[in-house]
Image (cartoon, rainbow, N blue to C red):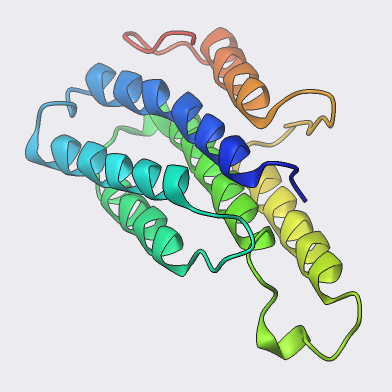
Length: 169
């Protein structure tokens, strides 16, 4: 799926970080116990992504990604930032898909000769569907990096749904 899955996933995670901080700062959550817990969980997930080796199981990394998501989902965020929350969630969904698709295929698929390719295609299709639900109108491009596409989606949200304190990246 990716020539350099670790670099791709880590670059997308790096693009997500300033948007999380912007969202937390704009909503007054950045320096609260919940905001600090979210950033600590994010930092742990980022470090795990950066240290992951494609072709090996990403189970531990996925657990840390899910731990971040669990903390992020508990933040008391106002409804007017839902689009930004969805973009962050879509970015995390994409990182999880990169990790999953570039990990060994599940044992249940091992009877077919094209197992890994089928696994990657299924993961990519599932992630694309989830991202489309979270960010309707998002157009995936093979010509732009995932972090560039993420930043474009964020900046478009800033243009179409401005919220005080949330800025472009």
